[in-house]
Image (cartoon, rainbow, N blue to C red; front, top):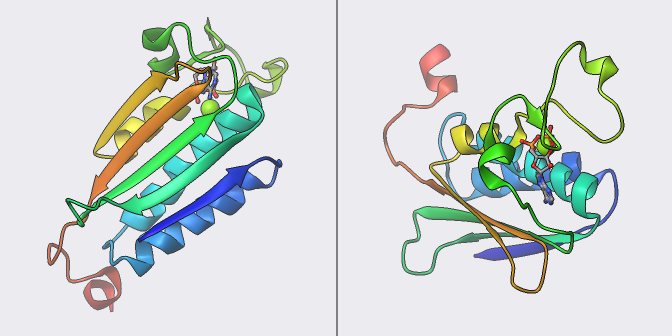
Length: 155
Ligand SMILES: Nc1ncnc2c1ncn2[C@@H]1O[C@H](COP(=O)(O)OP(=O)(O)O)[C@@H](O)[C@H]1O
Ligand SMILES: [Mg+2]
């Protein structure tokens, strides 16, 4: 099971986040996992749109390990030169974010996107592609039978 999309227009962050959530639901990911996966995709797609412009999203279940959902996001931007800094919460475009969000200039954000993706997913690998741009591979394991499901639990 594999689906892929181009990342190209401003609506794609929200739209592809919804596609990812549905994909995870259809593949039987339990509880809040589809929402977590959707949110992670939204953050990654948002970064592509802000910092790179164009890219591609692939969602698939690993062939060798069908319980592993894999997100791959690749773009055609300049890459991330200082990865440790980019991963820090509260640092956007290499600078610490201070003050109200409204005072943040230009394309800078809250600086928590990549950190959030790490917290939402089980594993995240970030690399600069030899041909330019960023490649991010994030994984989430499908755990079966851990929860009875919210609706059953909460009536
Ligand atoms: N696809 C990308 N291409 C180039 N730089 C990126 C990309 N994604 C993230 N970055 C860099 O990493 C930083 C941190 O990203 P993130 O944690 O999502 O915070 P924010 O987007 O709010 O700044 C960004 O400010 C940007 O400098
Ligand atoms: Mg971001």
